[in-house]
Length: 168
Image (tube, rainbow, N blue to C red; front, side, top):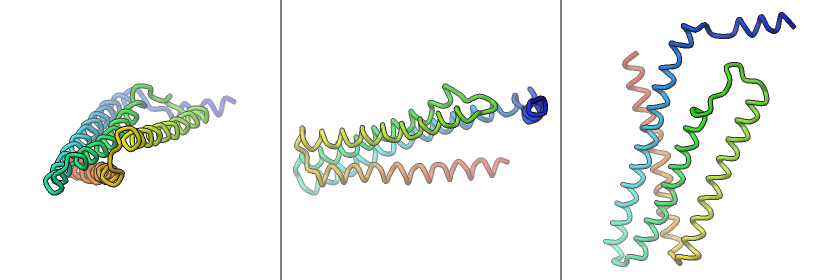
């Protein structure tokens, strides 16, 4: 028993090591929140641009509204993703995680993914059933927003990584 306690104590960080790590982690978290906000803004801009193109080509506001609604659903998805990514910072795990903490984090990961999926399906269903929007235009707006989410996330992360590696 005492050997296990000694091993755990050897794996712990000293106060000076912890003091050096915490500001770096807080800085990374602040940058992640900033990137998440930038991604949602990019989704909004691209959705508005695509909807205006659709309106100018078709001349009917129904298709443009459907594209806007699909992009809005995608923005809700991106906002929920950013919100749930920042949740672990508010409730940090213990220094030495045990299996219960790891299993709880895994359950939360699946719960958040299922939550986002259900919100997206519900919103798309409401747009099609209640608002009677064109399904093709609605899904085109949603796919456009999701594509912006993926591409912007990759590009912004790559830019941030290049900036960090150049400064090091």
